[in-house]
Image (cartoon, rainbow, N blue to C red; front, side, top):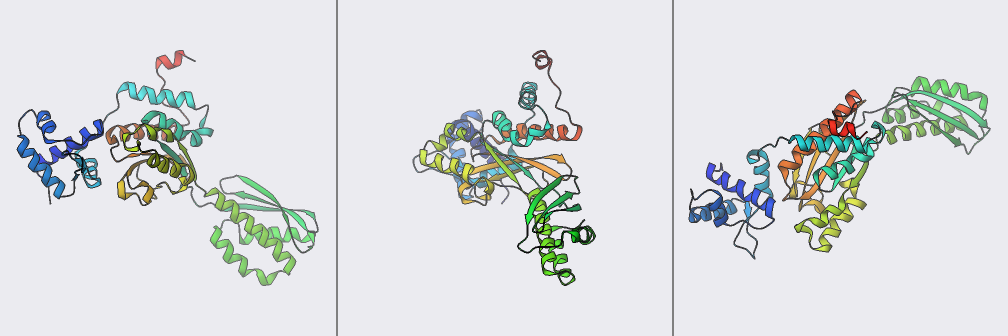
Length: 352
């Protein structure tokens, strides 16, 4: 059912008043905001219909209404006015980036902390979506008859090595042949393809040499899997205690514990959308059903992207959070793309 314009405007006012005050919104307050153009009785009827349609909820202890997840979703999709940051907000974000970063190498671990100071909500930062790597080259170095070093260079030019021990003694002079076999049959292949190739060459080697080959391949697969690992760092979880929704210490503790002990289960969108908003039950994890999560993506380069997420009550100030988080993510993309920070203000330059 398509809502009338009046219903949409009333819903918009309920959402924005509730975001601002954290108190149920009644017909009298809305009538005053609308300048008396609509009577309180008419507004009460509209509020009742919006409740029946699932856009509003009525707490048992109050005659006022609060938005439901469905109401917030309509607000975010259609009714919310997109905010442009003020010059002061842009300057604050730029100064935060300059003051917190000595270089690009620590952006991933500091992004969540910086975002928390900008949006005043708990945040998390993720490195995600590294492209599927493969091994560019193998090297095998003999140590003794039961030990060898496997060296793996991936196609992003990183090099890893590890000492391996074999349960069976082997002829170290054959390591050159095994190296050639690895570079011929296993280089430039994915982890899954390596497993298939390993089985296909098993009948070409003696048991002790096949063990050496297997250990080298398994280490290479571990290196490639580690390159795909997602690191999740949370920040600002104590902000939860400042929110009226979490005056109940047990409820606050539950969310804070989830963000610390189960942070790997925080939403990590698989698509490349620059911004995603998940409201209430849209979050798959039950621990987040009473929260909203806003996730912004930024480009790191080399097939990788970073994610910064904001966690808060469904009463979150969506317009402000999305504006600030989008600007922050765009700034990080510029930094990685051009290896530069956003422009500094004259005041900031003078402090250096």
